[in-house]
Image (tube, rainbow, N blue to C red; front, side, top):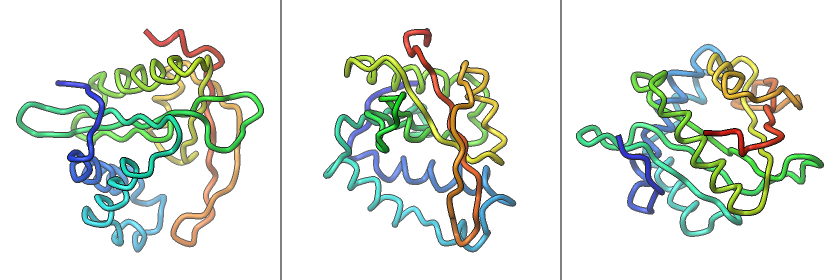
Length: 172
């Protein structure tokens, strides 16, 4: 497995992981009509824009298998919502279901934490749907529950929770 910085040419592979991970993770949580409306094509266009017009200091890393291509990705950089405490943010991390629980997620988060540290930021936050069964992953990485808010996806109100790390140098 190779973990590397993503390139524009990875947009379709990243979109496939994003769509497939949403469908496997959020069925029963997010309205099915919203999940059915996701597509590799729309996702590829959206992700390509991340490379053309990125958020300030955005980095994307992919987990790439030698024969199966991109099986996971993570993105992160400077925190986007002017949080009073956390200045770095893990924006997203998605791994295809069959590749989960093998250490890929930990390595991807470490790469994002290293990138954030290179920006002279020592802490990080990430937001996750409270009903997401993968939220335990963030707890295992030492994240503390620090915020809650309501969001809407597909016409449904959902609670989103934030995990924070006061010191990202702890990622080994």
